[in-house]
Image 1 (tube, rainbow, N blue to C red):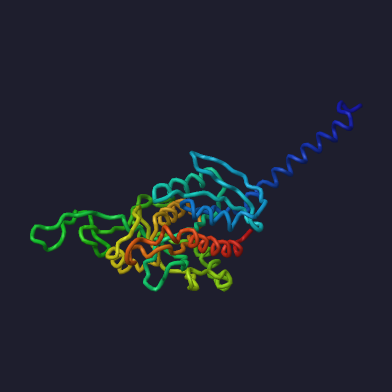
Image 2: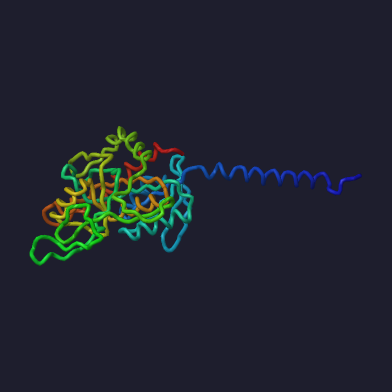
Length: 310
C-alpha cells in the first residue's frame, strides 16, 4: 500500500520530533549551569559592581520587577544577575526573595561598603565575614525603680550584655524541616564560597587596593553585624565590638544571609570599609570614601567569582 504521507513530509515530521526530543534533553543540562546573583545596596556600589563585572560590549538582558532592575550578563563564562538590594534590611530581604522567586539563582553574592568595627582595620580595607548577626534585634526595657537593673519580661532570657535599656536578642526564623521557628544566633555564609575567597586571597595584593597613601588589606573570616540603623556612635561601636567581635557593621548583609538560609541558597558577602562607624573624630567619612571604597569590594568579589564553577 502506498504511504499516505509523501516522503518529504515524513522526513520533516521526523526531524521536527527529533528536535523536540533534543530540546527536552538539553533543558536539564542548561538548568545546571550556575546563576550567580550579585547584589549591591545603592548607587556607588551598583556602579562599582557593573564596572567590575559587565565587560565592555557585553550583551545585557534587563528585566524590571516591581521597579527593581535585574541585569543578566555573562562574565568570563559565569552567568551573573546584577541588581540592587536597596538600602536596609527590609529592602534587602524583599529583593533577594524577589530574585529567588523569578530567576533560577543558584548562589547569592554581595559587594558593598560597611562601617569598620574591629579597631585593627582602617578605611579601605576589605572583609569577607563567615557569620552574620542581627545587632538591632532585641528589647527596649524599663529600669527598675531601685536602680538595680532593668525589668525583664518573663519570656526573655538575654543572650548578650545590654547597652543601657537595649537588650539584644537572637532572631526567630524557620525553614523547611523545622516544625516551628527557633532562635537563630547567626546566619552563616556558604563554606564552599568562603573557601573560594580564601583560594583567591593570594591574588588580592595584585589588585593594589589603596586609600590615600596606605595599602589596604583583605581579610577572610570572622563576624559581621547588620541592622536598620546608620550607626555613627563611638560608645555603641565599642560595645558592639565587645559583644560580637564583628569585623564590620552594615544595613543589609544579615537580612541577605537570613533569606539565603531560609531558601537554602549559598551566599557570600564582601564588604569594604568606608568609615569607622562613629570611631572617628568629627563627621563620618562615608560621603567622601564611598566611590573608591566600593570599587575595592567589587574588585575583590570579581577575583572570587573567577574561582567559582562555571
